[in-house]
Length: 80
Image (cartoon, rainbow, N blue to C red; front, side, top):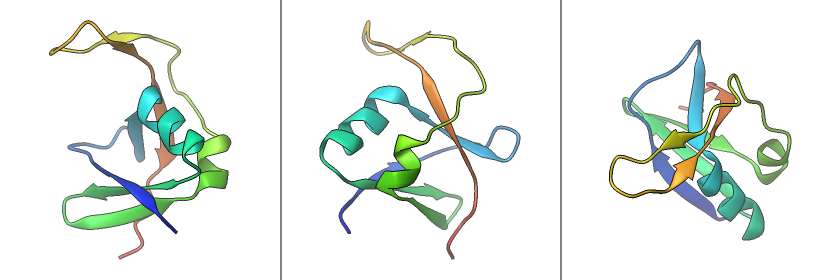
């Protein structure tokens, strides 16, 4: 299975947060996402991406562009 690779810096209440446009792009390409955090990895399947969860409905602004995004949360369950 092809996956998009995403590296995160922190967990929030035992969950990883991924920007909505990254999740949407992976769904559109019918790919999963491989998340890495402190040397551990977790694969989020396409099916899991489609059944996402959000702690907050807040929109954030990127520091580097004027792009706005929401965070999609997934329970952190490392494979390794």
